[in-house]
Image 1: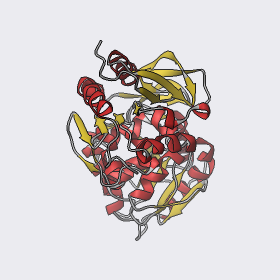
Image 2: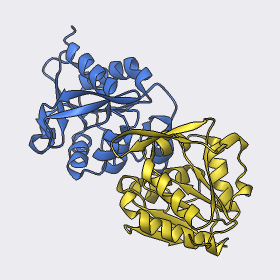
Image 3: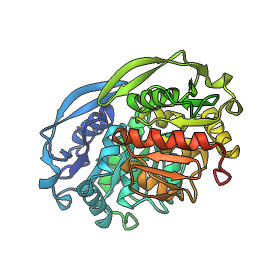
Length: 187
Length: 187
């Protein structure tokens, strides 16, 4: 266990249908780097994973979104899956929570279909990003500079394409969180 | 059984994860109006439905996409679901097949998340449309004029929001197909 993220707090925002490995692996990597990680979800005690091609196990929610304050966290991670970001992008509280990290110049990681939430939070214009290929057109149309790379880092914004990219994603996310705030990470 | 669509052929383009009622109900309504309906899918003998909150039954594919010719059909219907349009919008053959209906001014119906396919086919700019609420921002960013109505008809393009809108959707789709080609239905 490294101590790179000692004293740092990270929120993972998700709801039912998050791709399991895209929550569990960043959580483990962040904790191993010394961070405290909270799973934040809208009004639920637990959320149901999507595990590749079917529903997976339930995960405990640490803090309900209505009780969560983005100012208490140093960074945010958004897993993918289809149902999860499809629901969160319609949830004004989830969008305000997400936007707050950009307003405060704090690192944010999003993987797979997770960037859909960033489109609705209005924070992708002019940013260099990647995502699951199906989300590419939506990100381009929202003004992002989409590229096909395993991990893309743009001033505290860390994005990846799919679960195969998780090692690179986790490693860059930890690096950005260790660096702290990024002036150009903004809405 | 009416005879409104006698002699008309309609393609329903879908793949695994289509919302069951959004394929089965339009198929039934179109057939009852006298049309011949073919389920067209990429390289499969059958496709698996999504039934509200879990996988549903398998549906027989009538024509494989690689064997299908859009010119053989008078109209196209695109069901929603999440996995289905998420896959089709990445499939160049599906996008070319879809675009062909617009090039030939033929009626197209899309419901729920189905309009994602239309975004990637490049045919939504300037069109008055609706969709599942989560797709609203993607359609607006692609240049569509998005409205919140149970069914929206714009020169042969028929769109609806979710399975609750199916009666209105099927009724307007039949009306547009009966009318035939629409000059302003174009890419």
